[in-house]
Amino acid sequence: MSYFNKQIAVFILAISTGCVKAELVVESGFVRASLPGMASTAAYMTLKNTGDADLAITGITTSVAAKVSIHSTMNHDGMMHMMDMNSLTVAAHKTVVLESGGMHLMLENTAGMLAADSKVELVLQFANGGKQAVRLPVLGVLADKR
Ligand SMILES: [Cu+2]
Image 1: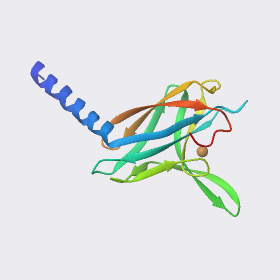
Image 2: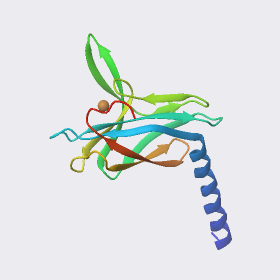
Image 3: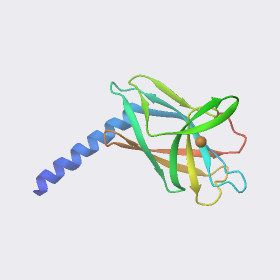
């Protein structure tokens, strides 16, 4: 690949990731501080897709947890169960709320305790190849809404 073509490729990549950023607006996000002795905790946020195309989140990574899962919460005969979802789609012009008792992100095998007032960066990966970094505050263990 010539130098010129490489420059074009980098330019196109910058445009496409820039697009994704403009389309998904993340609001009211936070990570719940770790409970003593617990290696996992949850993250909540409101995802607004302001674009014209559906956006599917197919993976999430962070430096503070070995794995981030997308969970839904099911009430089965009065017992709450968390189920793994492979992906989370935010349809064009729609909003998906990740909240306590509903869909949420699960940070598993966290590196030490996540303390209130610290910050956590999550990188959302989309089915279209784009990525978006989200910086969230860590709130106290009883936090329900930001
Ligand atoms: Cu969960």
